[in-house]
Image 1 (cartoon, rainbow, N blue to C red):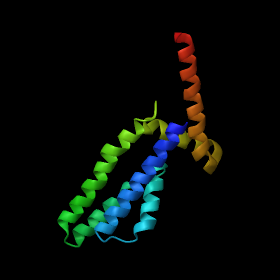
Image 2 (image 1 turned 60 degrees about the vertical axis):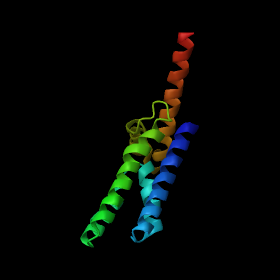
Image 3 (image 1 turned 90 degrees about the vertical axis):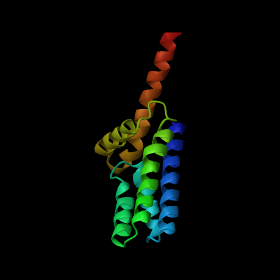
Amino acid sequence: FFSILFCDFGIFIVHFVVTVVTFRWFGLFPVYSIALISGILAVLPLASNNVFWIVGSVYLYWQGQLWQSLALAAIHFGTWFLIDPALYALVPLGHYYVSASGVALGLATYGVEGTYIGPIVLCVFFSIIEVMTKEHSE
């Protein structure tokens, strides 16, 4: 359970910090509100947080800043492609599709509160399976 909370918190912090640093570095505004929403969307798979850096990259390209546009896209794509899987690997059976299905099923079953209840129920289920398989193997 704590590994999932650590993973979600880590992903939130990484996406928040990367968005703040890159948006400030490249002069894109509003920085903190976009970074906060980006961090939340990175944890809750309700929508993709990639839309922010894609729009920012297109904006920079339209302003004639090709290299800044490519750098922004490369930094955020690298974060999504390299760091997110490394953090998800810390969670046993923690593929992000499993986490997303827990959120989606919890949301469908319990409403907004289900975004927290669904992953917790899924963790309890996986913990029971892990305990049962260890007991039978001994």
